[in-house]
Structure formats: structure tokens, C-alpha cells
Length: 356
Length: 266
Image (cartoon, rainbow over the protein chains, first blue to last red):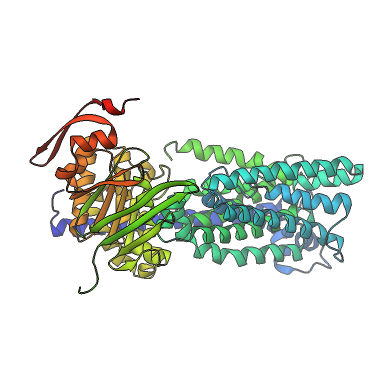
């Protein structure tokens, strides 16, 4: 290790700062491109549909908002816009939840559904739909989402209890989560076995995931949940980043790993449970959204979390368009289409840079 | 500093995992700043357990004081500011550059959470220059070799300038040249008035670079002192159960292992 001359060191630090700045600019550019693509995808989503409305008419309807006298405005404001926004918000919620899940479990295969969240949600939905049981005094339109939410959020809290009681490592948590998945699935199967044919069909459609139940109050609820959770996620970005070095290392750096994990699990349960409650189980986005974001911006969570939010929204928006185009005249349940759209995008990214 | 003992004081340290006692009543003479202390012993002797107790990863019984302050009584963050810990290995697939890693380590420390970035980058730059890691500063950790990643890991343990630096087998996966590089960096880290405790398997390496060695055997203190005095053929037979010839040399020891020790052969 030769002593560097002061002059050489001066040049070096400029280089260090320059490199960091360039990397940052590049990431901000990626995030900006993602955001713009997302807006374009949403507009394309608005312009796609069986009614065959020309894009200029849609723009005009968006600006006018006079739904009573104008049928185009009615379609745009009551059907297409809520569906398009719901797709984006659900994608954002699931992808952000997946990104945090992958970090706190130290497992790239984790998604909001890994630990039984979706199975618990299915059980909640199943109870509401197949048996009509739930919290008394709620209108049926909200019984389903609220029942779903309670079960999904409950499963995450159960996990946290186990994790704390047994000083659980990420592996313990994953194994317990898998046990939950099988338990809930068995209970759901039992419900299905006992249910009437009508109720069963309704339930199967629900479990495929669909935007059909979108409405403005539900959109507002989901948007509020994301807006509530996001600042806390962003506040934790440095700590989450250091968690990548392993839980022990993070602890020796003074990070309260248990608290960080509990907070993240609460955020994940809010995001995933709300999304599932409104549109049913939609897998894949929560798994792949964060992977795409990671390939694009790396694992500094200050960029990784916002990028995950956008990739999730974008994937779901593209899936919403595809759902209308695959079988002309029919809108497929979006849960079926997400994987069909996401897999090629995912493969392209992986194969494009083998060294990453 | 009158009245306050500087250095690391370790008295009556015991650690149990359930019914199994892994450390039994370990008391060491005060470990002074500026010294490199090698922690030696066969597998399962309790070396890593002792290091992990010092790092606060496992709750040990007994007295642990750093510069007169009890480590157990400190908040996790206060402890993390004084004690730097380098685990055996850093995960391989982390999508962060060396600079980002160090920046994140500083940003999660309340003392430098809001310091302006260029000040922090100057600190990072100085450390990287010292560890000869500047050329790799902007590379992702996932693109580094094993040896380079160990040095990056050492940088992460050092960047907050801890008083006590704990290194768990920093050389285990490294070739000879990288072993020498890492150990001379460890030596120079102690030169700043730090206490460095390093777990090593290689006795010759310990004899060459450490000021003191602490030998553990079955959870107990077996020997402690200057390497030349402590590491003897008798100790190797008693603790490691090997026959060896140990010769003192100018810089360190020459150790030739002949075979398993007869008296302890199964």
C-alpha cells in the first residue's frame, strides 16, 4: 500500500463523488422512465375496451367529467378509469409489499403470499362467500373485503408472534408460513366441498382475481393505505438496505432487527390484505415486480422501493390491457393474465444481463 | 484518564445455550488499546461464542467493560458505535457498491445520519485509500472476489471508527497474499488506539501478527499471553492433540505438525 500523493487523492475523491452521482442520476432516470411508461400504459388501458371509443374522445371525457349527458364520459369515469387505477394501485401495493418481504425474509422467492397471506385471504373470502359469515352489520359489498382483510392481516400478525416467541430466523418464519399455507388451503378446500354450486362458482372467480369490483370508495381506501404506508417504508430504507448483510450483521450495526421486521410485516399486511380484499388473489406481481426493480436500480432501498412500486403498477397496468385483448370481446380475470404478461418481461431482463 | 480503566475488561464471562455451557467463567487480563489479540482454540472451543458475546449477539453472564463502561448496559446503538464486528463471511449477492455499503453504515448511525454527504464521502475515501480498495469503490459487492469482499467487510466494520474491533476468522477463505494483506490491515487498525480481537485458526499467522493470544479449550481459558510464550509444543498437545515442533523465530513462530498426539489418540 503505497502512500498516495495528496494530489492523486484529491482526484480520487472527485472520482468517488462523480461515480456516486452518476449512479444516482442513472437510477433516477430509470425511475422517471418507469413513471412515464406507467402513465402511458394507463392511458393505453383507458383507450382499450369493447366499446371502441377513440382516444381523443377519452381524453375529452376525462377533462369534462360530465357523466350524465355524455355516455362516453360515463364509461370512462365509471368503468375504465376505476379499473385502470385499481390495476395500478394493486400492482403498486403488492410489489412494494413483495420488495419488503424479500428483504426481511432474506429470500428472493418471497412475495406477500409466501407466508400464507393469500391463503388466509382466501379463507376469509371463502367464509364470507360460501357461508355468509363475517362481522355482523356490514353491507355485503364490504363484508367480503373486510373479512378478507381481517384474515390476511391476522395471518401476518400470527407470523410475527411466532417469530418473536422463538427468536425466529428468517428460515423459521418461512417454514411456519408454509405450514400456514397448507392449513388455510385445507380449510378452504373443506369450505368448497361443503358449498353450493353457485357459491362455489362465485368463489372460484374471486380467487382468479378481478378488477370488476373496483369502485371509487375502494380506490380511495387503497390509495390511502399506500399513502399511509409509503412514508414509513421510505423512512426505513437505510435500515432495510443494511438488512441485506444478514440479520446478525445488522444487529451489530445497532439496528433493532425485530422492530424493523415487525414494522415491515405490518406494512406488508396492510398493503397485501387491502389489495387482495378488493381484487382477489393476484400472485406473481409481488414476486416479480421487486425482481425487475432490483435488476434496474440495485438494492439501495432508497431507489429499490420506489422502483418496485412503479414496476408493480406497470406490470398490472399492462396485464389489465392484455386481459381485454387476449380474447376479443371478453375481459379475462386479471389474475390469469399477470403471469402471462410478467414472465416474458422478467425473462427478457434476466437473460439480457447474465452477470447481474 | 485517571480512575477509569481504558481497554476491555472481561471477568467471569459465562454463556449457556440451554443446558450446554459453551463458555465457563472466562477472565482475561485487561485488553489494552493498540493491541491485536488473537483468539485461538480447536473447533467448538468457544472462540466464536466469545466473540459473539462481545458483539452483543448472545447474552452472556459476567462483567464486560469497555473503557470503564458496561457493554451490557449500553443501548444497542451505543454499543454498535463502540464495537465493530466482522462476521466470517459477507453474503455474496448484494446489489450495493462498496461506497454505498459504507454510506449506509454511516447513515444508520445517529451521529452521522444528517451529516452532509461530502463529509461522509471524505471519510469513506480515506478508509478505502488505507485499505487499498479505492479502485473497487464503485463496483457492486456481488462483482468482487472473495478476498476483495472480505476487505470490504472489514471496511464496513471499521467505518464508524469503533474502539473495539471484532473479527471472526477474517482470513479463513483467503489465499496467502490476501491473508497477509488482511492481517497487516488489522495490525494498522490497532495502531490507531483500537483494541482488535481476531479469531484465527492459523497459529503461525497469530504468532506473526498478534501481540497477545488467548487460547480457549472446551469453553475454558487454556492460556493467555505473548504468542512466543504461550504457543508451545505442550499447548498444542494438550489443546489441539497434535504432536508438533515449535521454534521461535525473528518474526513469529515456526510450527511443524508431526501427527496426532499419542496420549489422546482414540
